[in-house]
Image (cartoon, protein in one colour):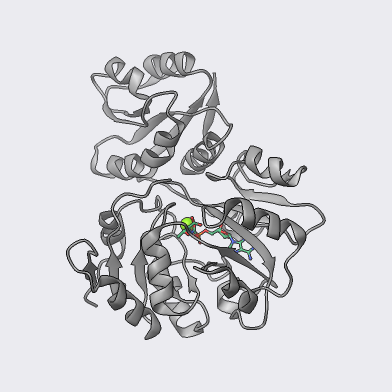
Length: 341
Ligand code: TXA
Ligand code: MG
């Protein structure tokens, strides 16, 4: 299959072309503010099956459905609890996915047999325009091969998906860099299933009590039933082994300095880069620049795939705000191999 590269900057027809392909049941890589998505018509089971095929995604892992206008939610969701109204008012459009009871219009392949559906209204201008051009809600997981770091540029999408999908729309680098926050609103209390740029603290400000149900401490075996099925799979993993080092930046840098062999890879904050002259190194931005850590994480993990390093030592940001999301992805990339110093 030929994968069309669509650049709205040089070709104003790109959005209409993407919309047409999506209406015809094809899969298109699209930019969002979080990461690139692999989009298809959410109401067309055949089209959605193509997403699972292109990614090599297990069929028991449900997809998020993306809408551009609030009214599109009524086709997808059978009941909107009060919390959903409040969260939509506070954070949509934006990097927040809500798990809600689904209608019969949502095909089983989207929800992986669950009676719920994840819905998100992205804030990215191109994502909104593409959804509107398609005229249907779009199911879209992150546009990586299953298990790889999520893509934050069109080049990342092409490197995983060239020849497997009909087109990719280039929207440059993603502003957020880690996937949306996922919150379940179907239980007794709201439950955070995946941390993201809409932080736990921001959710608590709106909702009060929010339970936290994110797997960050141990690998869950493949047979386990978990709240967000995506949590049980190895994720975000570069080819090399990753060791996450958690603690204050000074302490983690000192630990890595003592333990890293000259042929190791180093993922560190800018301030410590000069300390590791022998090793292959990528940076996460300055210690205090939490947004940069999220923006740069997946690109850095992908860059290590072209390095000789077989072990990567990574400094872990503190687990607050968006740092909770960065730490969560890093620990998953490491298969929960974490050293606390
Ligand atoms: O930022 C994002 O959310 C990106 C962009 C493209 O929008 N999408 C994304 O999709 O990250 P994906 O499929 O890579 O991750 C979706 C996560 C998975 O962990 C999945 O198990 C969980 O959300 N999920 C989806 N639907 C669910 C449902 N009905 N109940 C529980 N978890 C669900
Ligand atoms: Mg994903």
